[in-house]
Image 1 (cartoon, chains in turn blue, brown):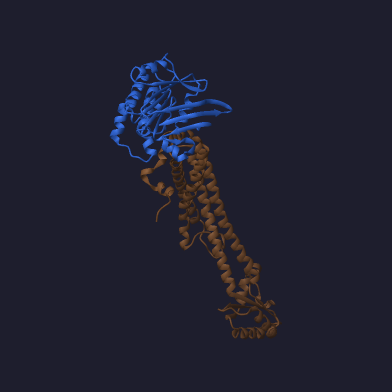
Image 2: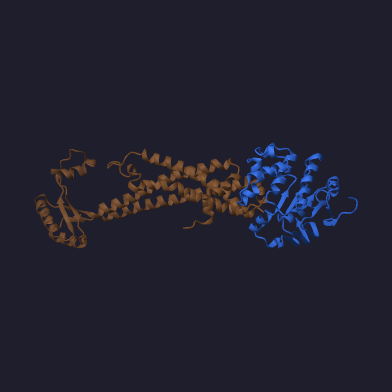
Amino acid sequence: MIAFENAAYSYGGGELLSEVSLRLAPGSFHFLTGPSGSGKTTFLKLAYAELMPTAGHVTIFDREVKSLTRDDIARTRRRIGVVHQDVQFLDHLPLAANVQLPLTVSGRRSNPQDLTDLLGWVGLGHLADVRPPSLSGGERQRAALARAIIMGPDVILADEPTGNVDWEMSLRLLTLLVELNRMGKTIVVATHDLNLIRQAKAQIAARVLRISKRRIQLAGADL
Amino acid sequence: MTLPPAIAAFFDSTRHADRVVPPSGHTAWLTTFTAGAMTFLCVFALALSLASGRLAHRWADALARTATIRLSAPPEQLELQTQAVLALLSVTPGVASARALSDEENRKLLEPWFGPDLPVAELPLPRLIEITEGDPAYDSEGLRQRLAAEAPGAVLDDHTRWRRPLAEAAGRLRLLGWLSILLIGTTMGAMITLAANASLAANAQVIRVLRLVGARDSYIARAFVRRFTLRALAGASAGAFAGLLGVLLLPSADAAGGFLTGLGFQGAGWLWPFVLPPLAGAVAFAATRRAALRKLRELT
């Protein structure tokens, strides 16, 4: 799916990530931990070609990211669902239109029933016509998740998806991600919430990666 | 005939991308107003250009077909020489007709300067003979030589020294009109480019979201292009309507009014202002598309 080979990323003269070698296998579930500013978001941005590695190689769906054209990157992102902590929407459009935006931009028509089912699955069926500024933090995260998966992506990357929500909502989001993983999706969740990781490990076989001193390593048994 | 993909996508209702751009913004009125004002000015520049063209043609045509012989002679010989000149002209190839102007016509010619009570008969005025040119035209140099032999006081004025600068002036005026239209179009393109750039910068978050969900640059550009083109089309339509109204309200052309009252459209010329809104739309389409694709390449 996505592979890093001695990949590094530098910005402003400083190296944020070094010698990252990692392969995200199909259907795997990874947690990425580390303190704030350790490079979790940078790692995810490299994984969906928002950033280009300054050294080494990143391969997405068997294609080296540096060889991708702008249109190739756009098409690649249709196969990768991304959920950010500070999720952004088109505030002038209702929630339903925002959720089906990936279909709209790729020229595909959405099945109204599928959209209703999807919104119902994330618990937002009753808010289809509401505009994003009216949504709570948890509702925005679930809406972002719905938008991320409407294209049926192979990979879902979530950057601190539970950062702005309470514990109950965190568990609800985790349940949705676990369900997606059981459907065969590859999931990567960047989080510093260790309780969430423990909760997930009780349900699925998740690998936990830790970014420390700009390098990624497998987390120990403390989890 | 197959339309280029960018233009075909513009008209494809199933792919209307402009909904993803917020409908309001400070650039909305700027684009509409600019297109309206520029088209309004363009209507007048067009009217000026077409009127100048007509004038150039009229002056050149009217003056080219006529000439005047000014005959100065002692009073007792004036009539004799006039008859001699008329006789000469009647057998000159290329002269369609010739006639001596009456005292009444002379008085009318001089009336603007000396008033209506001028005693023409008592003044030693030269006799004027009007020549209408035939087709093919007469040889003016040959005619001059024959006049010098038959009537030494006769001077042929074929209007060349008047006609040329007048026709040139009208031609230059027409050229200036078209140049103005070109400048107006360029200015409108530049203003719309600035407005499009401002809109793209103001909608950076929208662009980030669209890219995150897999939108290609061409899709994002199309959203802005469609929005700006329609705004320009609406503004230009209003501007063209106002311009036409202004031209219609100008005093009607008459002989005394001269050039200014002749400023307007005639016949098929009235169709020209209707070409301006689609033209403004095309300028907006090209300017916005170029600006959007360049700006999107800059935004990583």
